Image 1 (cartoon, rainbow, N blue to C red):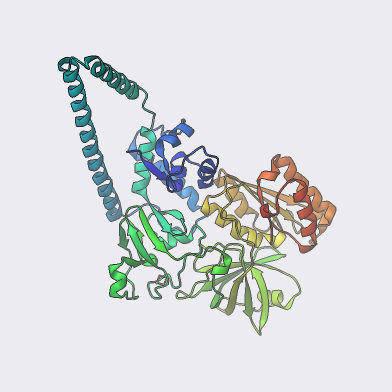
Image 2 (tube, rainbow, N blue to C red):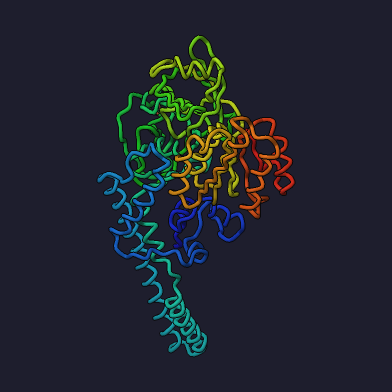
Length: 497
Ligand code: FES
């Protein structure tokens, strides 16, 4: 039987973002059978995708190296290799599959051999139809020989698929169709949140029961005890907590997940200041820690209202990824406003900050597989950072290019973070555009901004086929929108904060 692969698994095997595989399906280059594709079709499309080294240890090292590379932006990822018990269970499951495949092969061989014997006998004993039987016999042998000499080179990809199945189990969530891998010993919830998906959860700790899910197929393993108690009915229907279990084999589960920003309830959280970093004289980075029993659910790119000190209130975009469960980051402009002054002079570690939200519609279009261009001016980087981390986790875009227009100093305030992404990821490019000498910490005038946008056209001849997310000063939005429409983009491809 043909081996079927999910889009995520196929992407891992041939080393491309998942969005590229989805694009092949949309273009009809790969046929999808209930969301899965045939390995043989993948081989035909990627004939050069082979594992050159044959030694298994080297392959494992290769796999771990690529996982580590991804972990540079998935900083919450704790372990990337499964523990011994999980490895043993995965190997046992592959051995069982191998035994079944051998049984099926034996059956086919017996059938083929008996068919050959039958045709040989009939071509001699059945005088009336001897020629027909002989010609069938010849056809069968010729076809069999031809097939044997023209078997597609699927061995290396089969090996890689088996290796991936040992190193990482795949989770398929219904009815949303979300797919992701669990590497190391992460919980099903932790690994899901790294994709930036809004899974339903509360405490991450086995108390609230909000991350309840139903196991449809596959094997899970409890990695921490929980206090939440399931009813008998829930137990008999295979309900479990995603925060307290990992996947031993590939699993299919039913779980609640927000499809859009409207599905996420308004929340009010008490948080504590984790740290305040005055990164430059223009910008400070504020990090808040949420309570273990109450995390914030939001989509990357959204904003929340912060209340601190003597009722100082400001709505700010979140600069971190939803995957970073415990911490929420904000980029604060250092100016003369009471809110900014309070943060820079009064606020201390462990002070209380109230968080209300989330709100806003500046979120990734999860149905798009187009390349993405992000544009930020100064602290517009905050929501863009959240979106970039989310887009990288989702591996949905074939290519990402981030332009950071900086009016404040020689380099943008988190220049090194963007440089690290640029260096670590093959499909990520970062361009810093310094206009500080022209703007002196003021929003860029239209002619300066227009010159910045012109560099996009130079870099991207096919600008009309990308999605653009811009976090720029409000007075420039209309100008930028007119500019993008003139390049042939549709309104659905252009997003402003
Ligand atoms: S039990 Fe609260 S998130 Fe899992």
